[in-house]
Length: 242
Image 1 (cartoon, one colour):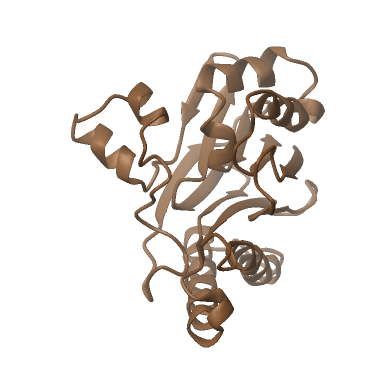
Image 2 (cartoon, one colour):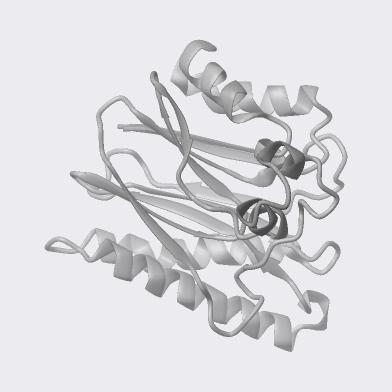
């Protein structure tokens, strides 16, 4: 197993409000996180960094203890704690009022990969046979797609595409979704912020990661593609090769 990550402010924004983390690939239970802060000048970057650091601090000691951990329970515990910390900071610090962040994370177990998401940062499964979005966006346009009001293609350019319906820090009780996929040697898990997925199509992601060159340069290729499209938002990607 190998893992790589990259983040960039993009071509328009003055500040990078994305954050990511991944462990070394030789850990007993490697994991990776991507967060995309929200709140504009109201400290979206603070929220994303707080979420990454809090979740990391919860998972690292628990996943390196003795015995087989309950990864789903640990993920929820970690996200719940991060949500509490962000809510508290938002309430106590006027400069952070209203801040929040998305989160998508993956923990690699011996037989499966367990994932969690809140918001519209995504996880994809990438194989030579194709690409599949694992997570479901918690967003206004995704709800519209599910109701049949717009198509997936229309959602990409919809004026409300950046409105999310769930985030860490938005409410005192956090709602997270969980997913499990088999761990298959050679397949890839891509975690990314919407700064990538909004400007690069799924098929382009697939082509770059499978046919564009070596996997260790995959995140850089995806970033370069987003930048070539004007990168109106921060861009973050973490690639796990199982």
